[in-house]
Image (cartoon, rainbow, N blue to C red; front, side):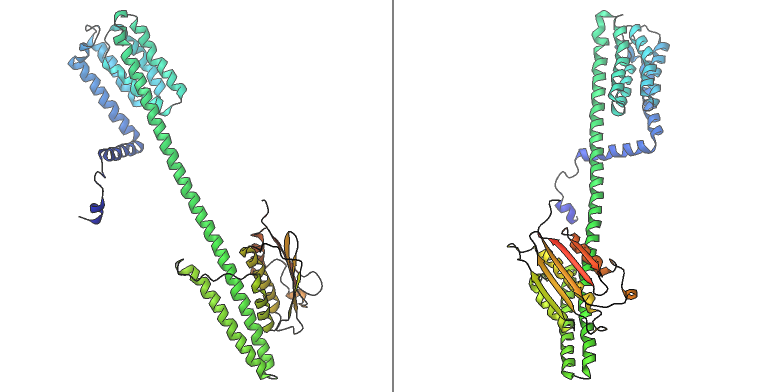
Length: 418
């Protein structure tokens, strides 16, 4: 006995489960080979009708037992053989049976094969519009009304059983149809939910990949630029001031360790379980001074200006991170050219307005036009624009004058109503 058998509750396979599986197999076979199933069903009822005639069982309920056996046999075959087309042409089958139904009642034979009309009625209720079901009722009951007039004393034996049989067949067809449509709706809804779930998972994965790529670019790109600036400055100062070279090497070591620590923390969040990942807070506006100090140590003079009054309610962590990363990326781009331009300097201006915060990063570089990248291109500028758009902000980057590069971020202090 397996563990599954030990934990399986009593009655895990009730009789209804076996019946459901059997019905599913029958439906599957019917979908694969409809003609085979229709042929088997029709053959069964033809044999049943013929057997009823050959044994004389029809005489036990007949109003007139002296009806010729050949006529009874013809009517029995007429009621059973057309079942082969009950699904493709149900109304036509009922119309074909209607005259024989009238003869059946009028002669007093009242054979039981006439109830096979209700199989066609069931198929109409299951697959056809309600209007077709109403027409089928008229086709089935009209001959009964006319024929029962020939036997006024026995109309209840002639009309009422067929009326009940028609109502029962129609009701069962409607119930099965409703259940089938409800099941199909549930399956369709489940498929759509599964598709939407997969799409949401793909969108979330794409957004997460973009976010990780942006963070990796900001962390590694900035720190490598700082290290490059320090290395170039140390090599330049080594011949004249060994002390400055030693300071540059110390700064390179410190910056490298910081970059590795940030990279390990980012990778740890992706690799480790949530309860074990290092979740050091992301940079905020309070870390701007440390950022500028690191850029200055790398050899780029930076001046910070603040205008306006900060809002009483601090900016959300996401907005503060956006400001920090944009400022970091803008200064990193400037720092890349510091080694070739000793006079290069940068200026950062933070301006608080009633509804927005503006960050302006400018430098006095003299990059040749043929060396300048097209405005709006590059992974860094794209990442800055993506960060700004997350909070309905705008970012402009370019060279507004003959010299100097400028990055301008405008960030709303609160979410817009949209």
